[in-house]
Image (tube, rainbow, N blue to C red; front, side, top):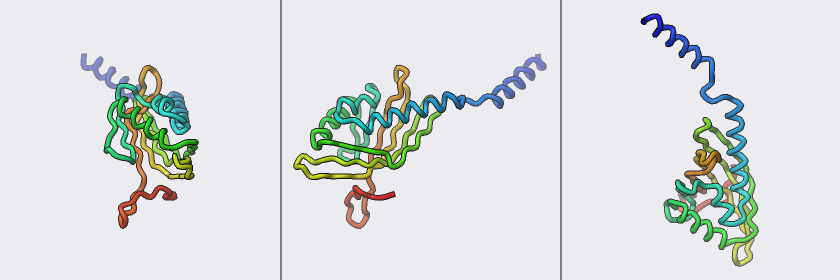
Length: 165
């Protein structure tokens, strides 16, 4: 009996040591899927496109505008509708995008540059820091937590919309 336990323990240790917990090919595929979703999200032109990026049953958004949290799809959708109602012709690009995943969870950290036209016709732009936490829903990656921010000048207490890297 002791020998059988030792053999099983030795086999388990060898198997665990020799096999990655998440094969590199699957990690590469998951990273590519998350990266593609992030590009889809940043290209959204309306609230309907934007909310497709989120888990419909489990989403919390910390945006740079009040309140502190938009929790649940109803609140996030209403916020997105308000965002897109206040500008036109949004364009965005990644200044940086880093994606990590273990196949079950993913994190996408980015710095994003946006340009848009305000309701009054004024051209505007800003750089935003975005951290998205993702998991799979029905076999597809979805964001379940997103945190958007801009740096704040401590001397004035005002947002610095065009901070540079």
